[in-house]
Image (cartoon, rainbow, N blue to C red):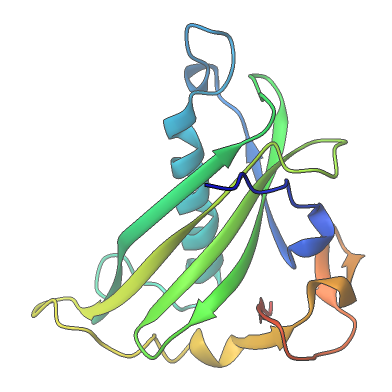
Length: 168
């Protein structure tokens, strides 16, 4: 298995501010590995909820995580401020592969990066359903090299084939 190289902030068009908590640290004095998955989940769901694409209490369609993974490159610890970069690596008719990276304040290289896959399903039947209409049209092709920093997050300079861009 080939170890991935850490990504940079510029490769992620959306960033979610993520403060560390005292409880995030483990006995070794750094953020515990499982906590990164909570950071990922929070970043994606905060993004979707803020744009009306997720109603956790009454939405007819919900996203179930069916796959996840994470690679670690450098430690983070309380009381550091982090941000979680978010992009869409693959978009299917009923599934999305989110790619995420965690960045320490003042660092442009990821201390951890990973992915998870949401399969969208009908809340009641749990059968696959199309990606929620309020979010699917917002995902547009974007080459990460064409992103620029604006108002604390990366936005596209132009749209080209490549990764899927999450618009605001």
